Every structure is written in C-alpha cells, then in structure tokens.
Image 1 (cartoon, helix red, strand yellow):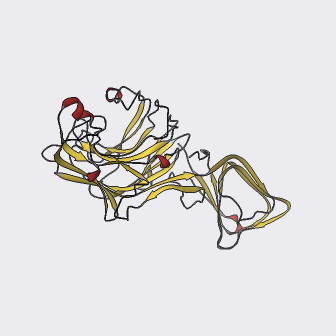
Image 2 (cartoon, one colour):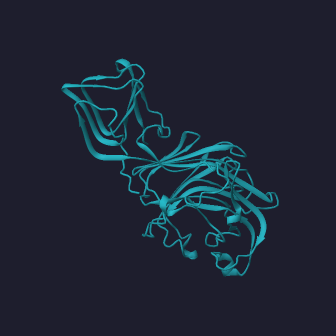
Image 3 (cartoon, one colour):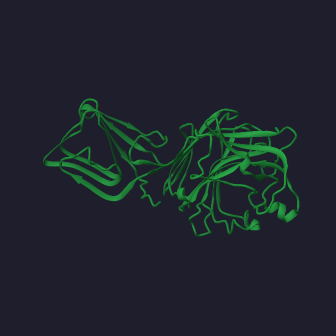
Length: 355
C-alpha cells in the first residue's frame, strides 16, 4: 500500500506530517489536466467523446447502444436505458442481430474518449448518480486505447461496475482488472478465461444520489476512491498500455431486467476529469539561490537547495511544492515568510508522461 507522505512548512519550519491515503492534491502544479468535461454546454463535445451507435458490445446481451440514448442536459451527461424494440439498419455493429436474426428489446447509451485522449497513468475522477434498477449494469472503466496496436493486453480497469439484481446486494460495487483477452474484436473470444483481479466493496447507498468515484493509476499500483476515501489498493498490476475511458449503462449478465425494472432509467454524470503528474523522475535538481518564479513544478529524483554563501527566500503568499522520488536537502539560509507555504512530497511512483 502506498502512503503519500506530505510535509508542510510554515514559519520556523514547524512541520506536519500526513500519512492518510487520500486522492492526490490536485492543487499541486505537478498535476496537469489531460481531459476535463463538466457537461454544461447542452451539447456533447464530440472532439472529446465517441458516441457508440448501433453497437451491442459484441452480442453480450439483449441491448443495443444508440446515440439517441446519450444526451447532455441540465449540467449532466445522461445515459438512458429504455425498454423498447429496435432493429439495427446497415451499416451497424449489431452482432447479436446478425447471428440470431432477432431485433432488440432494450436500448441504452455508451461513450468513450476519442483517440487524441488516450493516456497512460494518472488520476481519473467523475461524479455520478445512478438508481437501483433491477438488471442494470452501469460502469465506469478503461479499455486498451485506440492507438495501442498490441492486442494482447485488454488494459481494463473497472473503476466501478454496479451489478443491480445480482446476489451481491444494492450497496456493492465491483472493482476489477482484466488483461490478456485474445481478440476482443471477435465475439467468441470476448469472454475466454483470462487473468483478472476482482474485489467486491460495500460503498453504502448510491441510489439516486451523486457519489464521486476516483482512480489513481501509476506504474506500481492502482488505488480506487469513493468520495475521497480509498476503498481498495492493488499492487503490482499488469496494466501499462494507453487506454480510453468508457461510461456505459448496460444490463447485468445473468440477471437481466424484469417486470420491476422501470421502462426508462438514467445514469447522470456531472463531470469527468483526467489528470497526469508531470515527472522528471531521473533529474537531480541542485540550486544555490532558489528562484520561486522560474522553478519548474515536476516530480524530480532529488532536490538540493542552498550551500555555502547561498541564500533563498520565498515570496509572501507563495505556495511551493517540492515533489521528489528520494530526498529533499536544504542547506544554509532558506526563508519561508509568514503567509507562504512550502509542501514537500515523496512520490515513489514517479512516471514520465508519454502521451
């Protein structure tokens, strides 16, 4: 388990050490936004999102995903499940219909980030509201990116999967890692036995209330968060490919909707954010006289400030972050005036952004 260590320095270098396992401090300038959408435009930003249409997830169930079931309204992205008949028209990706000749009795919504937003490692967060409707399977997850050629690692991290109607119970989410699918483009290979890591977590009530779901993914470990609290840590893992981010409102395998399931059900997404931490993991920084205004905020291997004849001072109201893999050493005179804050963070899981 990773413990993020943070030291805050005030006047006279009084120090507070925090070891709580919480999401990254996103006010730290080493964290850079990779994608952000607050869905306030009343029209989905199609430069960021790919909306699946006439797609049935390789024939997994009696549901087809349509672009008509994806909307942006009231400051939310809305994915809508409907009990309705639908027949796909060419061209389409409706595998079940092609194989059986049958049309569908349910429709829903499914979106993914576009190729320009493929990413590897970072912190992902979304605020989402769902309902306890029998047989539905809302999910927030990653899958091997559009730009990844190697078809061996699925790179699937389920930030959550809700299995409504299964034996797990209403408050349970599953957090999963899947990899080594043989060929996800081929229906019969989609669910071959595969290495995966599965865990059920009781997160309390999420029926009709917004909950915030986060995932921290770095080269060494994966941490799941709900409402700012860590619910699971897994290390080491095998997911090291670029991924796309997916949100969908599917139906549950083996516990399909029944007479108690509403005719329509919605999944509301208030916002989605992806951050990456800027790392210069092998850089040893050394400065005699530290310049706050020109210092580049990245995670470094180590930092040495000061020495004989050196003198450094932070500006009033400065907010300095020193992020390192190994050590920070301050020699000689270094002044932190009243109103300034200096934060030292040890980041053993440094990575270099490769987007």
